[in-house]
Image (cartoon, rainbow, N blue to C red; front, side, top):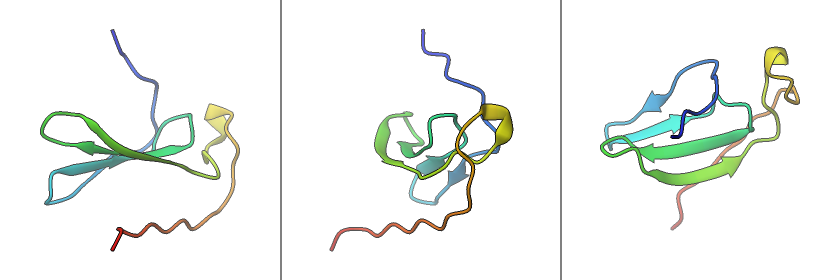
Length: 68
């Protein structure tokens, strides 16, 4: 049974049925299909951002672009 890990914050949803989540302890931003929960994409982030998680903290601006 997959139970996940604690998270701080919440997901962001789009009108295109995507859910973006970056509130876990493993420094990843993930995109899910909101209709079935399937993982569509993940990208590693440079920091986790909260002392309670024991992850690397820092201030970063990360930008992504859709392929042409």
